[in-house]
Length: 180
Image (cartoon, rainbow, N blue to C red; front, side):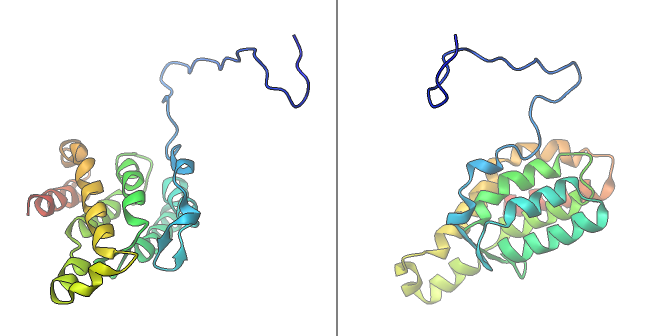
């Protein structure tokens, strides 16, 4: 049965089943579910974050490292100032940290550690409580970002056992930060 061009089809389409040994999900497949254009990073609109994450995932070591550096500046500036887009980015950082083809996994874990330890806005609000009255509350962003890191911490044991000692060490440091 054919349908008119503007009418939805009621026929079921099926996708071929993945062949044996092929991952069922593609890395970063959930990027499109985040409204990046509606949230902010340190430069303004966070719409560039998906491109940076993809560059980290698929780039050669130089490209991935440069993209991660730019991503760090956008979501955890100076290593301790998080932004509105930080919490939304954290699950993708966890995903990348676990992919063997990613060339800067230890640096990603170090970024997660920086985010987990970020308390800049909370410290400022303790001295200047009026900060909490702003429409955009960075203290909330900071707490959400830390919670996002904790939410995926189940991956710590696998990463600590990684054959790459740099990854294992960075993960141990992240675990210590999460225990604080």
